[in-house]
Length: 337
Image (cartoon, rainbow, N blue to C red; front, side, top):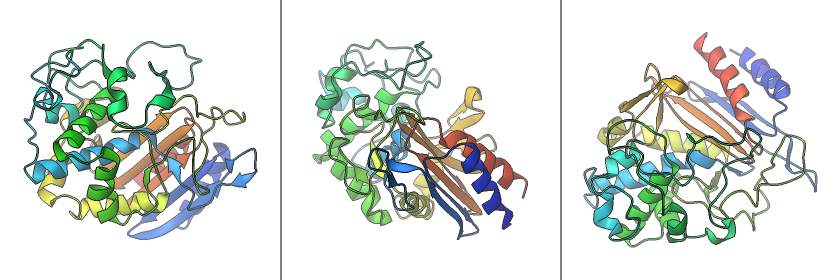
């Protein structure tokens, strides 16, 4: 199995990786490789402990935070969004539930709709409000408003970024705790993820990677993404912390094993991705592995964990799309072992 190191190195070279890749086999770290620059202008190299944004990988943290509240009886899967939102976001159907939001089956109009047609040359997804105004979860209300319902709640799967910001709003309002702090309290702290949190893109600490709009250009993503993320994206983390996340989640240290089983139970087939989806978690077609994915301007992230614990791997980059070819190569190699 030492050949996995050669496979990863070649894949990283072929993809011109600017980021970090880690592969664990049978509980042992087999590969940790960093390449490229965390800050191109200052020629600061990426390191194993560099903090990277993970875009929609954040949705797994949001789902766990909400499910911890469900487990404690603070929320129910059948709690309606309307019962918490009151008069806010009136275009959200009154029947939409927490479970439907988690499963991407709510049908709500999406403020960042990945199913909508867009310019092939566009970088990321445009915001309808200035990104520097998006700091707290409540700040997202103007961006979430005005999007008509796409279909009846529960009718089908439709990946929704807005649904996860709505979940963050619900969690924050019901708990009385700011969503960013709630994620730290319910997920990052118990998992021992000291290098993980919602950082501001305009005041990144020294170990955080700047996101770049292309593999070569020096332009950053600071004008393309919310200055501070919420339920659908914006967490920064390290590959080591991501693997701590999987360990804590699947061991039942964040929510009970019964809740873990509910989260990794397939709710929808997603043929376009050759995958299934549970509650905040992507599942392989055979439902034997769970994964989180993230893509946006200057961000690319894939992390996969086999439910048996036999393998886990994470690829994270500070430019768009870079994680996918490497992740695919690793997945193909592991499936043949």
